[in-house]
Image 1 (cartoon, rainbow, N blue to C red):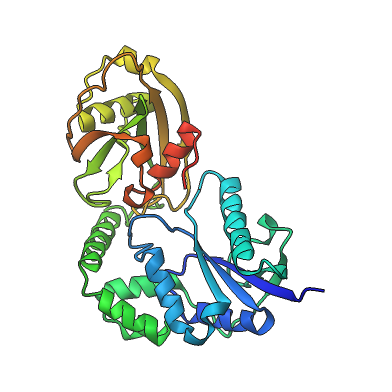
Image 2 (image 1 turned 135 degrees about the vertical axis):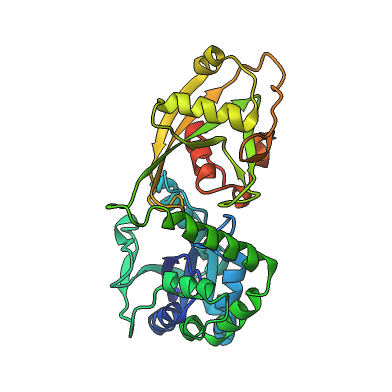
Length: 344
């Protein structure tokens, strides 16, 4: 009979990998033979909420476990905030791929790590037995990031909450151009939020976004300013007090792309719309956007477009060239949802 291999799966963002994560892995390896870390929010652009790439997260983890390299596997997955089934499928797919590659001759038992202060994923994966672990103390990755940026990268407090190799990496990263750009964006966001911090209640913003497609191309803009400076985005913006959602979408579409197409033609090309309300979709604050999908006729050439207002550029991009690592906020997920396609 084949030997039973116990495999513990942990889902997280690890932004950054801190001492709490380190303790979880050590405890898990006391009860399991192997740990699989599922790294969410991979394949996205850097933001103050997700400052580091998947490869950097993997490097952090591996630097903390030099003697257990063969007992730890990391897999990256992209966020799918509007399709939970796709998210579950991605995790299942990646975990099973690890099993096939590493444990083809063994019987594997899967366990899902469950922490008392973290989100409980066990209901999403009922076939995996829960592995409950209890840590000595709770460590907040968001507090580490806030302290790190507030101190300009040199913070004894945040350094004390991460393993020594991670602290070394974070110190070095603070001298990089990438950190400088993130710090600028973080500063912008803090100033932005001060504009409404005296309100009786935190405001909820309403925006619109246009998904315009023709002949396998999608109309995109390059953002001119923070947040998301130089990232690709859908044409869109905030709704005014005296306009409908559709009228706001058409106005933003015209001002940001200079798309010269009669309004009746655009309205006749509207195929679908949806609301996107993932609570963390925008770092500016609670922002609910309404997406409108326009499918233009393929009977004519792609209309000429030109960047306007806060758009540095406007252009037609082949759908095959969409790269989630270059796209603002959740616009990649909006595109997937409205076009009813899945790209990973």
